[in-house]
Length: 145
Ligand SMILES: Cc1cc2nc3c(=O)[nH]c(=O)nc-3n(C[C@H](O)[C@H](O)[C@H](O)COP(=O)(O)O)c2cc1C
Image (cartoon, rainbow, N blue to C red; front, side, top):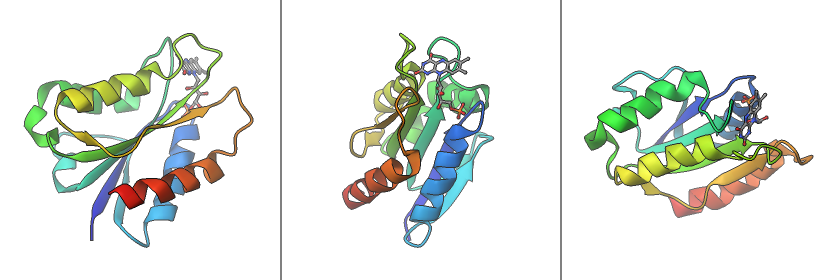
């Protein structure tokens, strides 16, 4: 069974809620795990990575996902050829809308990781049903895996 590791960046818990919902949606069909506290080496057993991050500061990464970003900048071979998806939670009232997720996307692509589908961008300034939108995005995403 394909394993999907969901790597979460969150400040206030919204991205974790989305990640938990994604996991419950995926777990009957994949070996899934949620990682909120990344350590080097965690990635080796994952066939697919699903990044689910919010944005903070001025397009900054939540502090709990910075170790993953640092890992991307230093441990290229482990990431090259991995497939991944991206859920990027931001707020379009910020000029730096979604920039943290884009930083992670760019770092993954630079390392030769293969993004599956387009990123899902969730906007806190809209009254969006994150769970429903995520579920329908995941249904499309898994057909591309
Ligand atoms: C202090 C603060 C700074 C933020 N900065 C940004 C930003 O630069 N760009 C963006 O798109 N969203 C920004 N946001 C919006 C959050 O990313 C968004 O509300 C997200 O859903 C929060 O998810 P979380 O609860 O997992 O942290 C910011 C929110 C806060 C409270």
